[in-house]
Length: 424
Ligand SMILES: Nc1ncnc2c1ncn2[C@@H]1O[C@H](COP(=O)(O)OP(=O)(O)O)[C@@H](O)[C@H]1O
Ligand SMILES: C[C@@](O)(CCOP(=O)(O)O)CC(=O)O
Ligand SMILES: [Mg+2]
Image (cartoon, rainbow, N blue to C red; front, top):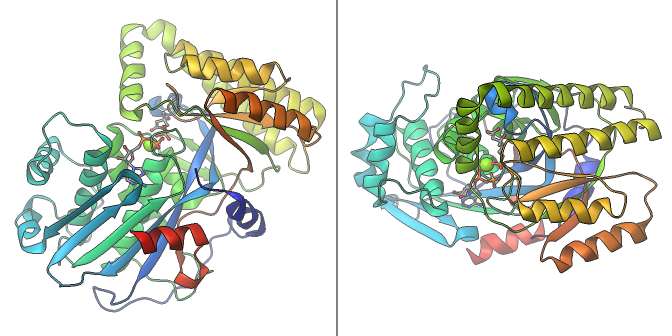
């Protein structure tokens, strides 16, 4: 896990992550002839995971761990290369071979992004040499890339070299799939002239451009998740804190500073499988499961109310309510079948120190959040961390809220990112 310190600082310093008024310099041509660096944040779901897939409210915030993408024009002008060092994948295709796929993918420039059809996915699997029912890390990442590349750039396939490297653990509940899809969508839209390339690092894309990035990233999430709600790609695009329900994205403009302990149980799991499991349960026991999802909805509503009432600083009573909501939701998430013994152990360990935790993201292992009150003794946090590390878990203290998708200049990239790009 990368050290998140630089980003915690950056997240705190960037007071503009909620304001998105921008002025951009547009590129006239269809292709850029220079490097582009794009990044998108991971996310933490405070409340509403899984329920949000079924139309309930989720509250989610950007995380100070990001996925970075470097795009360069291809060396020989005849190939596309995707290099994914986190998962040890590096693949190259000839543009002439990819060109044959274009008629099955390309949308007209005016049309809205469309989701991948089963036929298109089968087509891509055959092209990339993946077997049909495959759901492994590499094939999902490669299929999502190819889907976005062919759909966005279909008019004139550019020769490119792309490296994507992330500070996020993949498949741990922190929205790495969405950060991956958002950064690829933004880079491909920019390089094909469908959105501008802001002239300076501190200038953001317009709302219309962010909306386009988000809707393409959602299609990438569909390739990876099957049936995503869209909350993760919305946070990856806009950052900050969002209330999300049935595709409606409402930024929460002011949120009190919240400190959390983020813990990765390092138990691998697949969002796609867990989401499908909840759907099966809901179909099997609608009368039992629907009230649980409604209760999770009410938890999200109550949490939002408390956060907005405590914008200037949460009171002790408000912290107590937030802690109770965390406990109730963790029980609900167990009921809908997305708990795991590793998460039970984590909750027991933090409870024994008076702290409250819940899983975040799809569950089944992966990550959990533990709320830290501002007056907590550092010795308590150290003791909890020590206990969790003894289980083989990784934990780090961070604050929530981070900027959404961003363009960078090479000189402004953090050291760990530059190092990883140079090695790739
Ligand atoms: N940096 C990355 N490099 C390659 N693939 C990635 C990267 N980040 C995410 N992915 C893709 O996203 C998948 C993980 O998505 P998911 O199961 O939704 O977990 P989460 O979004 O919680 O990390 C991986 O299996 C992989 O296909
Ligand atoms: C379980 C869910 O609510 C969140 C999944 O997040 P992640 O992929 O585990 O980071 C699914 C979704 O909203 O699409
Ligand atoms: Mg995901």
